Image (tube, rainbow, N blue to C red; front, side):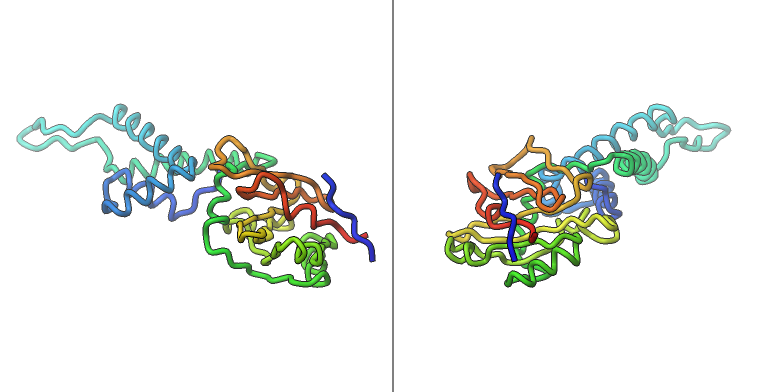
Amino acid sequence: MTTKPYNTPLEPTPEDIDRVIRYAEGDLNPDERAAFEAEMADRPELAAMLERMESIDESLRAHFGAPSDTTIAGSIRPSVSMPRRIIGIAALIAIVGALSFVYLHSPTPTVQLAHARGVLEGPFQPFVVCDTYDKFRQYGIDTFDVPLAANFDAAATANITLVGWRSYQGRYGDESISGDKPVRVLLALGPNDERVIVVFRAKDTLRFDTKDTLGYTKHSTTIGGLVVDEISTLPEPIVLPLLGVEG
């Protein structure tokens, strides 16, 4: 058995929409607002939704007019302005529609490299553990139809641990979303317990933009027709040299 070595806009959820509306309406408590603002810093699509909602909000209010207390025949004139939540929902329907169009028609959805922080700094626990050559190979066949190979002996010598596999952030990696093009992440630990993730995917499934890195590095290659990105805070890849395809 020989191994060929390596040589070289998230779609918004209903919860996202609800939080954007609640934030715009001032319904979040101070702690919730601070947490949401921090999340917007990491997820520019949320900030874009809020900005777009406020823009549409202003346009709708300008078009329909502000509430008036002018009386007509002794009665209060009915206000033609819409409740803020209705405006917010209308705005977000337009936003989500636009984002969905882009998502469905874009051949390669893009996320910022900083988006990987959720995996790197979150619970570093795998869904599937492949701690032997045979298990690793079989996982590649079952998931990608590719007999992936990993050099566990070299990993042990370099004090590198291949922790296991999980989906990417629960987005793009879920079968319900990615269908027959799953995105999976190999979790690994470096010699000093540095966290490393290696993202495997089909070429047109997901792309990392390196505009906002938050100090992370990305090293890329292809293995068995899959695009593979190693992401960590280390200057050089340490896991990619251990990976290949059996053949």
